[in-house]
Length: 277
Ligand SMILES: NC(=O)c1ccc[n+]([C@@H]2O[C@H](COP(=O)([O-])OP(=O)(O)OC[C@H]3O[C@@H](n4cnc5c(N)ncnc54)[C@H](OP(=O)(O)O)[C@@H]3O)[C@@H](O)[C@H]2O)c1
Image (tube, rainbow, N blue to C red; front, side):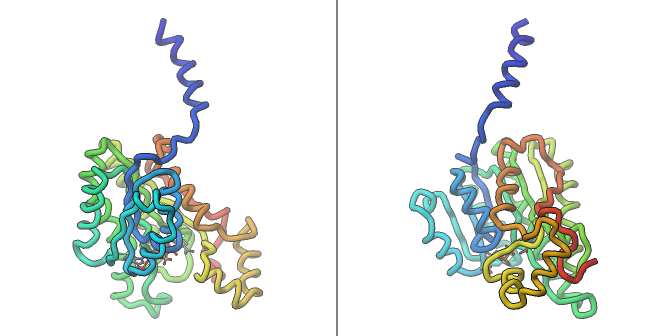
């Protein structure tokens, strides 16, 4: 009888429970010195997590570090490295896990495209694009697995793109981003028995100061307005902070029931670029 009475009361308490935050969580984020990765790192630190992040440029990492309040800086570990350089990423994951005790989450955020359109991109561009997006993701997750298992489980978030499920130019990029979405669904099943959740997040075109869409907005406002009018029903691109909130949710205990999902954060964007489908 006791159990029967306790059930509904417990459920009610759980429903009313507040956001658990990320205090005590230990997370590795690749590519955290600017753009979306920086947004994720800042939000995780603000929510109380310990965070390790890497990028190729020392200056960007130093600027991030210097901009933080001392208490957050004490919870951040950075290292300058190229995620495509054999062994460097794996060593960084090990260093982070040893510093923090173990790991509760990883975010594969580095990504991008090499080469141009189909007839310009050669085999080396296809291989480099694959390695940057998919190869680094696979090596990151493999390196983190023993530590996620040691923590009793964890959360893996793969940053894909609207280009991974809506076709556009740079097929080598779309194919790699599409593979990340598939990878999340596959790994969710394979790692589920270890209590490791794996999800993919697909940002739409993000408005990042100094980057592609921000430059178009300043340099060719007419073309920018036509793009927004045709492809963005929400009337504006998403911001890195909006995407970071979805990523942090997936890393958190509030997402304990979410695995194998593909979460677009694109305000119902249509095509990924002004080129249309
Ligand atoms: N921007 C968009 O509109 C958009 C839309 C959809 C999806 N995405 C995806 O979202 C993710 C982040 O995009 P973003 O535009 O924010 O990225 P970004 O500005 O190009 O770079 C983000 C970070 O990655 C680091 N980085 C780049 N290449 C690296 C490498 N080989 N090794 C280590 N670090 C590296 C950069 O620092 P360093 O240069 O110093 O290495 C920087 O800290 C990517 O996976 C991208 O495909 C972006």
